[in-house]
Image (tube, rainbow, N blue to C red):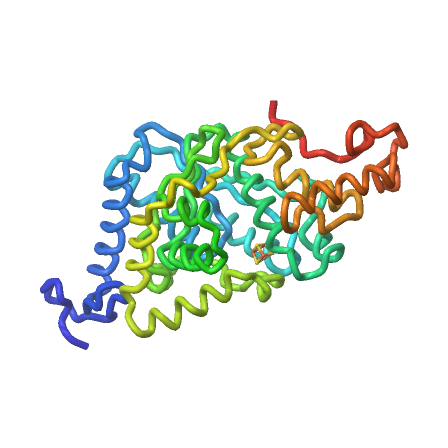
Length: 356
Ligand code: SF4
């Protein structure tokens, strides 16, 4: 191996995927950490004295995020209180094992940990949802419920920010996915390093410019403990196609990842494009772009034996709701109260508990 390109006098042991530089272990750590520090400083991600919930799955990204945030917080005196927030989707053989890794991180990094489960929030585990709906749209349910569960966890913990482990590859993939789907509204906001979830608790992405390969290298050389198994319900996720495309492009030129992110950042959306405005769900009071949020519609579908409710266009959802309203005066629960329906549901219908 050649000498480290920083001229520190040591032998290089790796070639940085992002820059092609040959570096020794210590110089790689320093470059990687300094870039994340620069990202945090330039975007003014955190106010001093804030509490930050790190969305922790036990995977490489959130493990490296927790480790590096702790390190930078101490090194540069950000004055942050860091806590771990995990969502248990209820996926046997996947999330139960990865949560053990998060519990280990809690011990290793000395951070408080809050775990919220789909079962306690929605009354369903992902195992039960997949048994009901099959493996086609499972990620739609899981993604919608997780987004809201993180908001609920942040609200419960009274934190100022939620930091997620989205890396450069994730963001480039999302840009490609939104282009492939023609989803201009999402394309417009998917590269933002700070997103407003609408409840005053911003979501931030400190690893936005960190390459996935470098996160893996960092975790490997630092000997961090993280969970590597893929979700057992993953193979049909649409994102997988964008991932394969990105990996093929990256083989031709690694700078393509940054180029895609930059294209997304500089994109100007036409004034005629309809961008949804955020409001409050009339049922659960959580943030929504419709009167009733997607999580409440999906949950209603599950509870009423209409699992396809909420999948597809909103006009179809309204039609299904109306048809069901005409067909039944009660929910499909075994223990239904059989009360006269109030709007589209009887009184015992499970709703997501309101926050206020
Ligand atoms: Fe949930 Fe789909 Fe991710 Fe599995 S792959 S954790 S089902 S979103």
